[in-house]
Length: 301
Image (cartoon, rainbow, N blue to C red; front, side, top):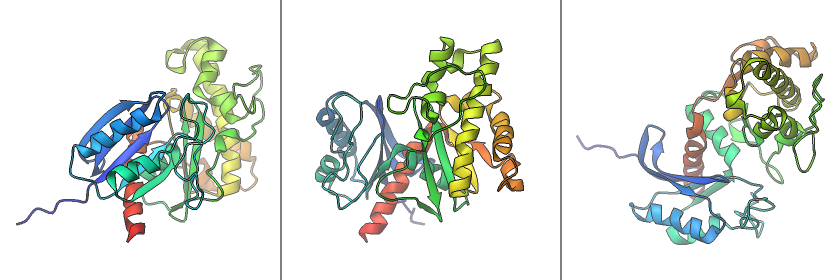
């Protein structure tokens, strides 16, 4: 019997410190992978990305899930570019153009958090759902919504990490966001734990850990309340390093119910399966880039 070889896609997850490249069809079918440091020169970094794929039979398409902000409107002259990032050297960098020119295959492009959402929807904690939100809580906070089986899209990409949240009792930290101060990211991203307690989240213990989890759960619950009221998702999936704080998820669920205060609250909102940890861990973004590649191939006909 002739073995059926799956269509192989290229995946690029571009982060602020590293770029992960995969060749495969799913998280369980990875032909090769590599990590490339995200240096200060985009041309050199992207040449290394192209060289990785050039060492294999060409992929059917490539998906790129990138840190941002990015330009996602295909008709815009800056489509495929990183825009106003503080990452040195990467402001206005074109990601799609050099890879498309070198490989001559369809390219799918979106944010890193949108890629992670697609990965969790296909293979992770949101399988089988048509409407959900994926949020990452780490160095920053970002989220992407899938509505009716498709990524929500408009003039740009969502910036849910920058929504306003009420200050938690006893918290005097001024906020770490350089743009908004005490927005959700400014109060609950990983760096805020270091700023408050002098240690990163994974090193906290005792009273510091209990206080960190209390404040973190409170801020996340207030942000999730806005998401529940605005997007009415079937599930909220949370990943990132801060999501690994012990005891965080049960407290987030409890505080979300409290934040809803009975208005618009459904039995599902208090269920253990409504706010859940990510299922794919660090593989969510690269897996989502495979989905972006597949979608690009379908769109190309």
